[in-house]
Length: 131
Image (cartoon, rainbow, N blue to C red):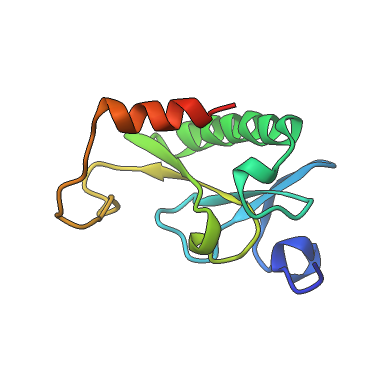
């Protein structure tokens, strides 16, 4: 995957905050709030369901350490950890956004106003496919 910027560490132009043999974390170039970090596996994956369990677990353990550091440094009202999959992953390489949050910081969910079904049939369809 030579074209993937996250697969080519030398193409990442922001400062690193963490690295080991499995993952690396660095400052987001377009932060939502100061302290916005991206955490990525060194191997190329697009979606969470492609990542071996031990690597995914490792990423979440590191995200916990990053959250702890952000809480100590920034004293935020909270934090967000988010990941976009499929075509909504604008880089094409799995990455977690980890950033401090503040009341009134302007970040939030946006989505259409149309009604969405929430019922037992939908829950059963999902439940039956979880392996």
